[in-house]
Image (cartoon, rainbow over all chains, first blue to last red; front, side, top):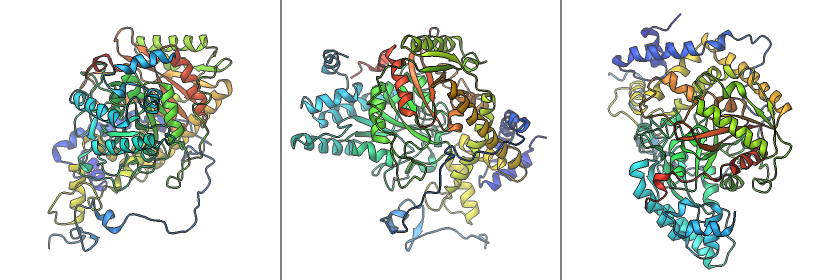
Length: 99
Length: 503
C-alpha cells in the first residue's frame, strides 16, 4: 500500500515542514521509492532476535556529582535567538494568532 | 624514510600544508620556520586555491595567527612543544569553534555563531594546531557528494568536474589539495571514509565512543563518530593520540586506548585478513575497484598477513537498516530547530506553529526535508513496529556478523565505495545516491572501526580508489597498524597533481 499525497501532507504538518504544493508529487514519489527499498527490513525473519539500541552494549549509566559548574550566561544563550526581549526568547502567539 | 628526502620536500614547498606533522615539528623545533610563517603561508595557499576547490566555508585568519603566536612564544621561551605544534588544520562546519559560525552548510544555521568550542576541536587547538577554518559538507551531513551544501559543492582536487564525496567532502578535498595537513570530519554512514576514498587520502572512523562528539551537531546519535583525514597514516595516528579520551560532556566517550603511534609500524606478520569477496565482487562495483581490492589483498599478504575468506551474512540488510535508523534519529535531532532559540526564522508569522513550519521549510534544503519526512513517517504509530524496531533487530544480526567474522580474522578488507568519484549531477535520484554508502553503513550500525586507505589510481578512470579496512570495536590501534602496512605498499598519499605546484 503506497502513501498518497494526502498522507504526505499530514506527515509534513506533523514534522512542522510547510511543504509547498508544487513539491508534493516529487516528495510522494520519493517516499514511496525509499520505503520500497526498505522492504527487506519487514520481510526478514527476526523471530527471537532482541533489538540493539546502542552500539556500546556494555555501557552502564554514567553518573556525575550533582555540582554546579560554569555554563553559558543568559546573554550567550540568547545570542543566537532570532528574537529576544527582557532576557527571554520571544515567540509569536501560541494560540489564536489570527486575533 | 631518510631525513634527506624529507628536507628536500619541504625546502621548496608550495605550501607548508603540503608537508607532514613530523616535518612541521622538525621545522619549528629547529627554528627553521616560525609558526607564524607556516600560518601565513598556509592561509595564502587556501586563498589562492579555494576559489577552485571550495573546501572552506570560512577562513579563520585571526584564530590561525593567534594560535601561531602562542607556538612561537613557546619556541622563544624554550618550552616543550605540544604534539601538533604549528600543524595547519581545519574542521568540518558541524563542529563548534568559538569565534566562527557553525553552519552545517545550511541556510538554517547561516548566521549561527558557535557559543562554545567542541571537545575534538579544543583538543586539536590545545595540541598547538593552527586552525585555518571551517569546511564545507553536505547540508547537515545528509549526502555523499557535498552537492546538498547550501553554499555550493566542494570540488574533487583530482578532477574539478567531479564530486569530492560526502558528507565530509570539504575535509577530504582540503587535505587532497594540500590546503591542510589534518582535518576533522564526522561519519554517520560513511561520511569520512567515502570522501577519503574519492579524494585519495586516509580517512578514519574510530570505534563509536573513541572521540567525544560534544559540540558536534548531531545527525544520528547512535551512529555518529568524529575522525581525522590526512595524507599519511602517521599523521592519522598523531592526531588520534590527541583526539581520543573520555569527555565528561559526552557520556558515550570512552577512556583512551593508549598510544596510536607506538606500535604503528610493527610487522603485521601472522595477522589474518578477512577478504569479503561478496562485497568486492558485488553488483555495481566497477572492475577497477575489484582489481584494486585484490591487489591490496596481495600487498597485505606480501607484508606477512594471511588471507582468509569471510562472509557477512546480513550485509544485504545493512542498507535498509541504516536508512531506517539514520532518518529516525535525524528526525529526532533536527526537531531542535524550532525557529525560537537559534537558526533561521521567518519573520511576521501570526502564530508559533506557522513560524516553525515556514522557518523549517525555508531554512532546510530538499534533502534535509526528505530525511525528516522519512524519519517522521517511520516513527509513526503502527509503522514504528514494522520498520524501526525491525531495523534495531537487524542491527543485532549485523553486530553478530562482525563478531563472528572477527573470530576467524583480525581485520576485514572490502571496498570503501563501489566506484571512483562521479561527476556533478551524474546521480540525481536520491535513492541511487544512497548506494554510495553500501559498504560503509554497516560499520556505523555495529559501531566498530574502519579506515579508508588510498590504494592508487583506478586502472580505467585514473581517479583515486580507497580500500576499506575494518577492525573490531576498540581495536583501533591494531586497525591502524594494518592500514600502515597496506599504505606502505603505495607510499604516502600525495597532494593532487593540479595543486602540488600552484602557489
